[in-house]
Image (cartoon, rainbow, N blue to C red; front, side, top):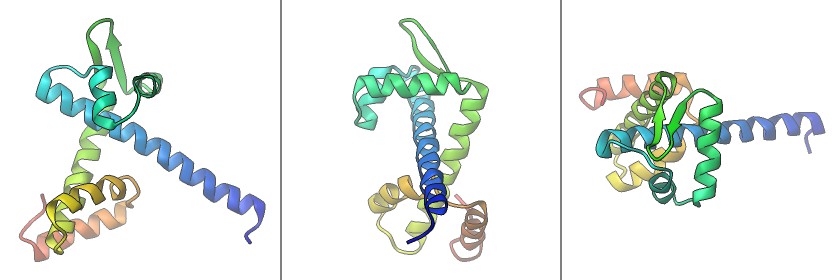
Length: 142
């Protein structure tokens, strides 16, 4: 077994990554809802993420505390410029991961599902390699 401090550090890093992934998912969904529907209501966010309304409210509060979102009474949630930048970054990563998975033969629906997990934990070096792969073997990046 690893030393306690080493093991605790690894678990802490994993929890921090999961917490960041959660914010990324919310930012991306809020951006999508705003683009499609013109508004992102907590009720819609909760339904689309498959979480309770209370959970959505709690995470939206965290987005607001971190300067990624704002809200207005009776109007829903809006992204700040930092939140929009995060959503765009996540969307770009997602599209790249999906494109690579499809290029290697993964069915589109499975690629979309798998990308939801991979996109949050992939390193910049791997993203660069994915992009280079697509340019060289699959006719270009997404």
